[in-house]
Image 1 (cartoon, rainbow, N blue to C red):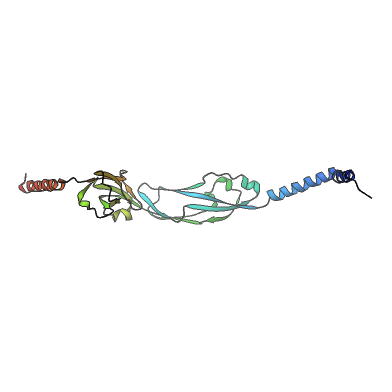
Image 2: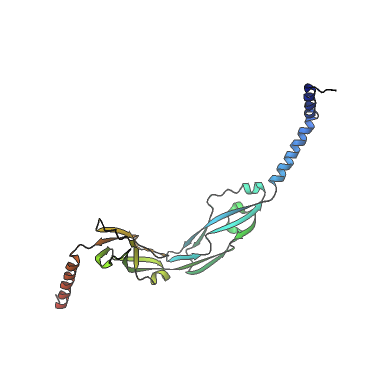
Length: 240
């Protein structure tokens, strides 16, 4: 017996329409169960919080064992959906702490209120350690550095000295501040340039000076300067 195309279509139509209401309800229940299982399944999420540290005005932060904290939490889809944090930061204020080593144990109390009903699984690192030093000031001479055979005696620098502030261990051992290397051809077409200074770690200029002016002495300047120094010496010796 031959089955026509129209009879095949009718048969397929009956398959889909027969007990359609029951089939639709069954599919709807299956989808609801699947959604319930997915939404209420425990999932994990890791958040990274940057660390912002404030120290006393007379101290300098010289080290800390971490710049951020990673916290892994677990909860349902709905639990984690409530957590919306942009640029998460945890602040530590040591304005009233003495200089030296400072340590803190990281606990769930540090995190925002949205984490209150969420299970915190891991926190890394669990302990934070900072070290601060007393801030001191010192005035040191500026040393200009040349890239090549140029002699520094043929040049003048302004300012010749600079105030430095920073961590005690860094400033106390500082005898001078060097400039960046001046290229050999820096004075090929001019006699005056500005060159940045190189500040050691944990130090800075007291007045914000970052560059110095270096001037190449003109021919005859050295002789004139030597004569002027000699005249000043003679005046001093004669008591004038």
